[in-house]
Amino acid sequence: MTADATAPDAEGPARPADPVRANRARVARLVSIGQRLGYALFAIAIVAFFVGFAAGFTNTVVLVIEVCLLIGSLVLAPAIVFGYAVKAAERDDREHGR
Image (cartoon, rainbow, N blue to C red; front, side, top):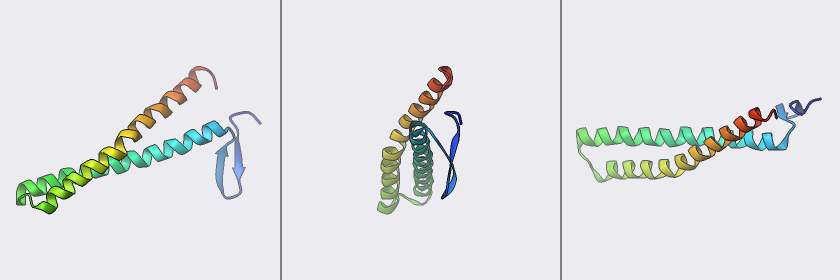
């Protein structure tokens, strides 16, 4: 087997044999989830803003907008940074033939 080979897993699909790549794949999955969640929260905030704009900004609408923006920012910012880190590590591996 080569270093790129995958080891079959009795519980599911094959996993990368290299522990660094396995960890990187796990981080990439978390990044993907974080980005989807963060952007979804921003979308909810935008919809709530336009609902408030049309129907009036009640305390509930303002609270939804604020909470969605706050949690969305807290989730999305690290997801974006770690996403760039994973892409840079993959690019470095490709450039160095790993």
